Length: 233
Image (cartoon, rainbow, N blue to C red; front, side):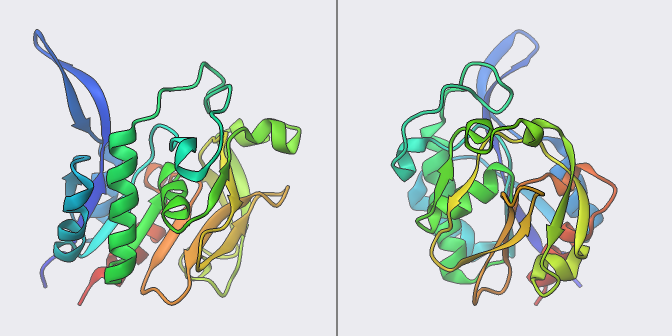
């Protein structure tokens, strides 16, 4: 049986090779490695015109919205935050990537293509469905525990996420933003100990899940496997 083709969105960064420095579409190798390990065929999706998003969605068996720079708050009607997730000066938004990925998420939802949003990718999915984000999580919750990479989340056992990984998981993923208002059709299915949403999924869709953490980084590949399984004919 052919491996399902899984498109992975990419970071838009300056890259150096030899004496060249150019803007490049790059991706941490962990994403492709996790997809291949799960039985999928990974392909990288550069942030091109949003007009092409529908064509991508129709030709792919699944999509991963990868992590990266925070989504531009202007897309969901908020003012920019004063700090980035790492506590440094706010990283500049990447409007070109934002527009492409929001369009890709909407196209995947419309076409019922299996979709997994990882960290930033969960935020993209929420914004694509009309939701909003908390732009400064430490200010909103009064602590900085979400900036610690390892933490435990509680998961709804009846959700697709819970069926894939269980009712509790120790996960990797520091973040300074989170879901404020859920987008249309999205349900919260995982939470931190302070009830900040750590996982969402879309009602009525074959597989549309978003998580605040990075499943591709750990040894537990069950969530990526669930995405690839959903993508099989």
